[in-house]
Image 1 (cartoon, one colour):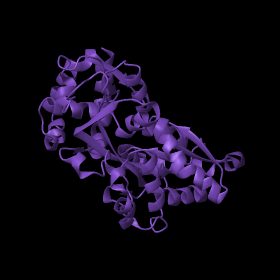
Image 2 (cartoon, rainbow, N blue to C red):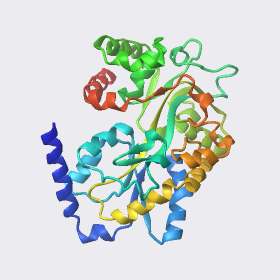
Image 3 (cartoon, helix red, strand yellow):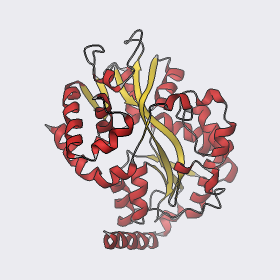
Image 4 (cartoon, helix red, strand yellow):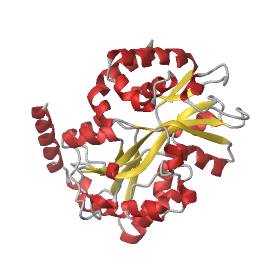
Length: 349
């Protein structure tokens, strides 16, 4: 494994050295998750950064997966500079030399951020959760208040939206089957626990519409294709504001994690990328992000100064986190490949 990582890291450095002059001339390119999340980053950060520095930005979006980044970096495609990544992609990409090590002194020091937002290769972009979102126009009165309710198609008839991945799906299945949040990962680390999660998924599979991008969820709910869905809160709250929707949230048993900003190892715009990272992680700018989309903030000072009203529908509000489960990224680094193979085969049946 260590030899493979050294080879991959060496290839990444060779790819970085091979960047040609045309890639150096392109705009600084930042990659997010698309939809209302990317709109919020543009309004909070990117427009102001270009105005204040004169550095032009180009945007792209993606759906995650370290394999995408590995192909770009090792293959010599230097079209991306800064990317928003999930935790396990951060861990794997850093081990393989796909990301640059950050200058934490330039970012204000590690202690300026929540401990979970600090990594050698990444700085926390936002603290977010997956929760239950549902259409309040179709579910009157008390809505779902647990993952067991999410599975209860008799009490709450209609299709469910779920992300097409074993990550989160297996955790939610175990919680729906009565496993306490603090026992989910110990259970999943056993073959019997994995079998139990898949048996629970069997129950809901006929009622699921699978999605691959979180930006699809407001459309699935708005078009009434699903009555409820796994979702991040901010997308639905923005839809309520901008489209007059009546989407509602339930935080019981939410899974929370940090997304990170990383700079790719073969970026030809390293200095400008580091400058953008500093801009996006300043407390005054992170606080501005929270006004555009409800999200947990990773800068300690931003959390301290933020309007409490902006924390109401985010993981920054302790009331939302009483029975929450922190995503175990190390579990998914260790078991992700084999569980993804089994999950994909299960979905295809």
